[in-house]
Length: 401
Ligand code: OVM
Image 1 (tube, protein in one colour):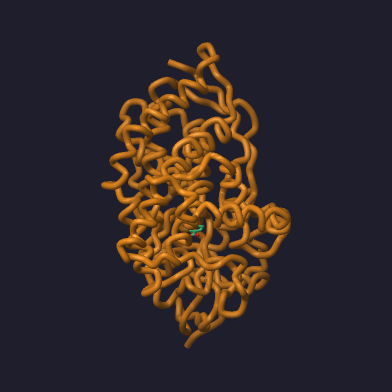
Image 2 (cartoon, helix red, strand yellow; image 1 turned 60 degrees about the vertical axis):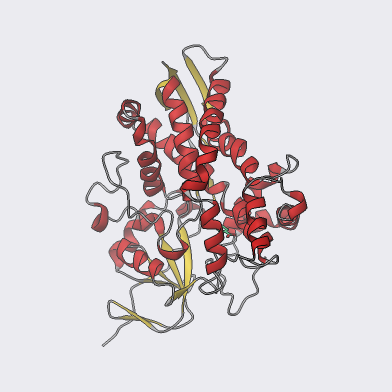
């Protein structure tokens, strides 16, 4: 016997919920393993067990129909679908294999020293005209500044137009949600931002060395087709900037509000990567993605029919006490955050995660050299996005050592 799942009429993308989704996450987890969100007509998973299961079962929960609310089976996508994010095997395989190698820990070794030095240079520059205390906005001065200093160069982008990267990403991540005011607000610039991004993916525009050139070299080898190459470069530009910026904001906010954890990191720089992953678990910069069912699926006695949208609350799964224990809401470097779904899981798991971790390690390590303590220096302000958990402003006071 099967029954209808519990329902909720919550607007999961309203300003109030986006500003603080934690109470809704709690309510949805408690309501059951699957909840029908009647307002969006989608089925929500908020527990770690079901989110994890959906992420690893790509046959039953497809990405090719779009990982936003729009169902590509019935609606035309606003941009050509990503060969990585919005594809399943076998189409997904070659692009994934190529990008995975280009962004592998082994391939990143040649960037490591330069990025560590760049982080030291940025931190020295930012702290230069202070005395023993410096006040800054950690979003613009650090979380945005560092990725923008290293990542576009690593891709091989021209200098001109780089200011389009963050607004493009912001709009793109809004479009995974419903067509609400956040999407409408981005609409006037969408065509211009999208055209700029697409233009950067051409071989002639990219530097002779870098991730972009590496992707085109894979096309020369025949590992991917020349038609696929620009779309794979586009994935780097789409997924590689805003996500990292908000991940860095998250870890800086975490440390500013957990001084004992900063002490711990200062005592052992090897914790920088764990700290970043714990912040990704704790804050989940990418809050949600959708899947689409490819068959009737039974979950805990409820049937989700074929072709329906599943909304996976990564942020809720990452704080599910069933998986993380009673202190799931605590930012704690003593925890092992592995198994978090902030980077996804399974064959779509973030292909750029090693790049993000290297950026975080470089920035945090550079900060531990100079900063004894950091604390909020004013009210932190959220930036609302349909998919991203983001800060607009994080005023911090840094006490230098
Ligand atoms: C892509 C893409 C875009 C946004 C996010 C993402 C988190 C990938 O175009 O492939 O992964």
